Picture (cartoon, rainbow, N blue to C red):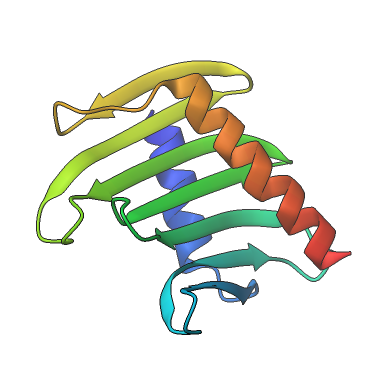
Length: 135
């Protein structure tokens, strides 16, 4: 686990990586923006993805923040945080440590939690999306 934590810190501190952002807005019938998704991708000059952060805010849903760290296209670490609908209290706060396809450790700071396979599937969705936008 400490190796993964060290890798995450190294990625966050690298100065040679480039961050890009893609935003999708959700509008109501009057054209007012009422939510959306922001996706931040951290890549190198060869378009290798190291980190994806997705901030999700949709009507009638809890605001959420998903962080995924990849090593050689494989999920290594994820942190999922969801807030209550008003955004004033954390209802889910979990970290997931992976070695290849295997979950090594899951840390849940709240009673609510997300299944590790669901986290992996979400990471794959954002990873594939990220690959398509960097090509």
